[in-house]
Image 1 (tube, helix red, strand yellow):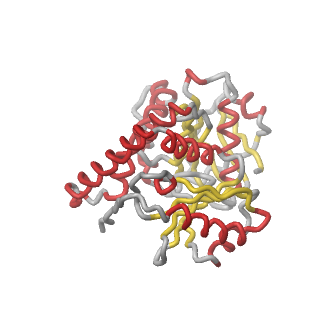
Image 2 (image 1 turned 90 degrees about the vertical axis):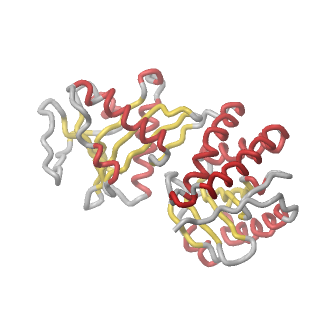
Image 3 (image 1 turned 135 degrees about the vertical axis):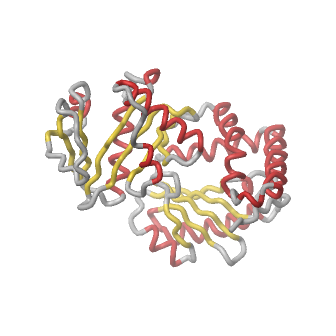
Length: 316
C-alpha cells in the first residue's frame, strides 16, 4: 500500500500546539524529563511541512518511558534505523505527532537542533528546502505505482540535509542501521576492501543483509561514513561481532573504541548479556584494551574459523 505524503503551507498554530503537547510530556515524564524540543519543518516559521508535529524529548534514562507515554496515547514504534531512539506516534487526534525520545547527550539531539536553527536563520536555505519538498511530492505522485512512498520522499531530502549539517559544523558520532542505499554501498565496500580482498574472494555473506538475525551498523562522524560493524544475534542473550572496522583515513583517533562501546551499549539495551568475537592476532590488543578476554565462541552455526584467531568475549 502506498501512503500518500501531504505537505501543507505553514500553520501559525503549530508552535502553540507544540507548547501544549510539550507540557503534557513533561508532566508525564516528571523528573526524568530533561528537555522537550520542537523540531522538523513545523518548527520553522514559514516553512511548508507535513501536518505532523515532530518533538524530541530528552530524558535522563529510558526505563519506563514507553509505559508512561503509552498512557498519554502514544504508540511505540521502535527505533527504526536509529539505535538509542525510542520512536512514538500519536495518530487519530489533532495534532498528529511524531515523538523521538533520546537519553541526554545523544548527538542525534544536536543534529536535529542544528538543522532546525539553520533553517530558522537562513531564509534562502528555507526557501530551497520548501521548493525541494514540493518537487519531491510531484515526483511521488508521478511514481506512485512504484510503491516507494515514504522512502523516496525522505531519500530525496537526504543530500540537502547533509549539506546543511556540513555548514553547521556538526561532527557528532552517530550509529545507524543500514537503510539508505549509500549506507548499504558503504557496508559492501568496507567488507570487500578490508576483509575479502585480502583472501581474495567476493564477499560470500551479503545474504546477511536481508536476514533478521544480522545487524549492519554504520558509524557517522557528522555526515561522513567512517565505520562499519556486522553483528549477529544469537539465542541465550548472546551476540557475535563478526566485523568492526574504521576507515583507514580515520584511524588512530580512538574512534574504533568509541564505535565498539556504542555497539555494546546498544546491545545491552536490547537485552543482550554477552558480546563475543573471533579476533585476529593483530586485533587482540585492541579487544583486551576494552576488557575482552578469552572465551569459547561456541558458534551455533558451526562456521569454520581461521585457526590463527582467538575466541574472545565480554559480559555486557
